[in-house]
Length: 601
Image (cartoon, rainbow, N blue to C red; front, top):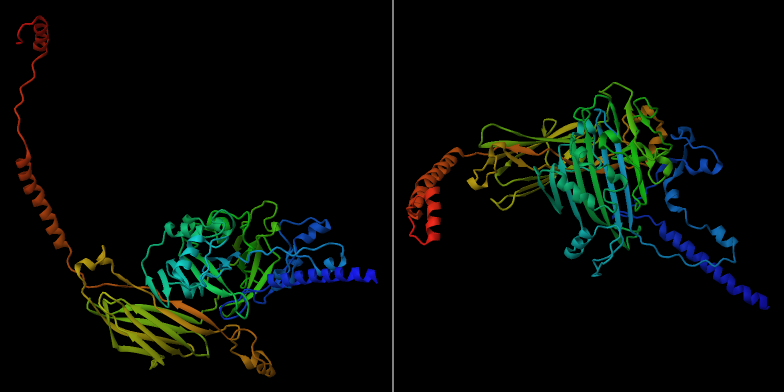
């Protein structure tokens, strides 16, 4: 009986320890959700291979892993099973071991990734993304004094001014949608500050002074990880360059009881094959960034490189080396894409050289290969002649063959272009297309711009044109830029829409699949949200002849310098008569006469 009394407390103690481990494991694998409640770790199928398997069995691991060794696993399984977490079976098999509760770790997290997509124009698109999660709540009045991964400079600003969201982007160049497709993160040319609405500086110069403080916000800076590739001489010598910073609260679970602060730093670059100075149709990390990768950021929980190989299923378009056995599939912008994945946290990724320099070499010489056109595309230009009146034309293309969808057009026009809103026309396929919603806020001179917002239905396979007339205002001579003949820039229009997914689109439903399959709904997303920016406008305004003021200033300065300068010189100058200095012989004689006490000569 005494033995049973002694074993019962020990059994209770072991069960309590096991429950602590189970609860801790569940808390660590809770996915971080978006504000709408969807989890970030979407269930995607990933083709992986364990690089440690060959080392454990004693086999030699080749420098380039073979593609035949691939196997499919779920993404959540890899993230939900930490390497250092003890299993329940091990804890239960050793009853004599006293297991202490795990030390609570910080929930701050940092992830980095690079997505490389070869374009059909032989150019290449590189997209960096750095994500920092900060588990804190300073909106409730709590004072934050500890910063581990989140930059302190941004945290202090958010805490002091109670910022809920912050979005800033710097963009140089124009994204060519018809040649490059849709970008992962669209942004207008110039500087973009969004607060409820948005405002732009369409001709803001982007330089290294913008990139250097942006890199300092990263936990590892530019010393380790993917940020090592960010060499300003290469990034700014490109066809398109856009860097952005996004801060927002995100949910920690699907119920959104607790929130964390998310900082996303993105950098998108398009390298042109012709301007890069290389004749061969091949790209590598060294040719793009003049650097290679040697290690991941030590503070990053995930560091990966994704290469888009959707259009290269059998390797007939280009060759990728070194090969990787890790593949991933995802639905991006309504299209199913396949990526080759390089995990920088695995030492086997760098091979024996301890350096990673991926190479893409094109095999096919067909530069005009077929490319899936984006379903939504937009253009804008200024029409008319003279310097009094003109027209702004905005073209919105719907390339979907049989589906129509609405778009929200937001246009901000400076006050010196006085819009005639009664001339607003919307046409589609030669017919009037009446918007279902129009909001117009007139401008005030030198106070606020015009604000035009409308909801337009785009018919399938059509071009919708929005036209409005304007009159050019005559500015004061002090309001002109240093180079008025260059013109004045007008910010981009913003087009937001829910575009039908390409995955769910099938034109020949009755010919390519059985009839009974139409009863089953599509599992993929039926539509996705996209925001499109048009190119900025360059408008000339009535400009006075600035040569006459220049001549008047030059003449006035000449008169002041010659007339007043000469008179002032005569009034302030003093005249003195100076005797000529005696000769050397006379000075010597005076010295001798002074010594003898004789009067000087």
